[in-house]
Length: 98
Image (cartoon, rainbow, N blue to C red; front, side):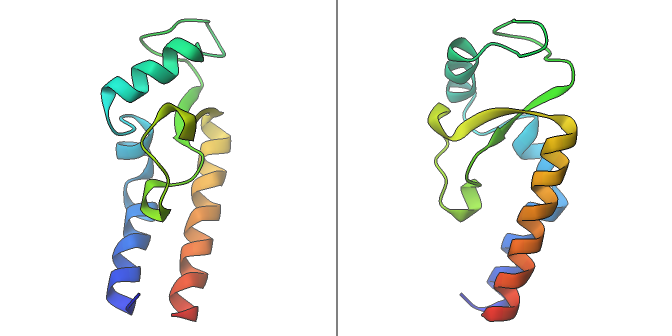
């Protein structure tokens, strides 16, 4: 992977993780399937707002993760922020090694 392409991938992690991946994780049908099987941890609902939690990808799509419910999980907002920081750190290491 060349440096400019790696930088773009890093921007995907750093620039928009909560605005895109968190609030709208890919295909809405996949998100709905995840919610039906995994109701909101804070209120038990299978639709609508889930206070304090976001749906997050286990393996980021930019790193080859799928867009399906099997690659989604609930994370507290704080844990999601920490996860995003770890992904960004890993991406920076990847840039250095490429």
